[in-house]
Image (tube, rainbow, N blue to C red; front, side, top):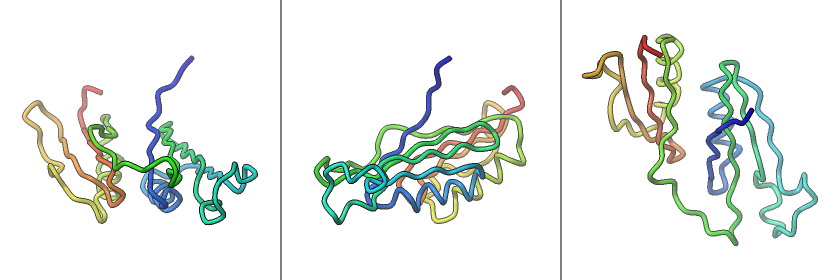
Amino acid sequence: MSTLNPYLSFHDNAREAMEFYQSVFGGDLRVMTFADMGGMGMPEAEQGLVMHSQLTTPDGFVLMGSDTPSHMGWVAPAGISVSVSGADADSLRRYWDGLADGATITQPLEKAPWGGEFGMLVDRYGISWMVSIDDDF
């Protein structure tokens, strides 16, 4: 079996972002820095950056992320959104409320023309999210 997981790139704040997502979704967060992996030839100032992190939530979501080292040239995320959807309205509204803290709401979570509820936002870390509540899921 294979899996498809979002892998988010951050600019020096991956640990903070992943801890925020853990506060929203719950679950187990594992964080590995460049220093944890022997430095990997990174400058001293970047040793504490996140080389890899993984959040595994009670709902079975797996969200991964890392910092982008300076020599790789970080680019702000564009053209992709992380989508969370399903029929558990209470959980999905709770996720929306958590993600919305400090976010830019681009489409409020409200009744959608196709049924259910739908909303979009860009969180405080620049990641685009879509939340869809629909009994058909």
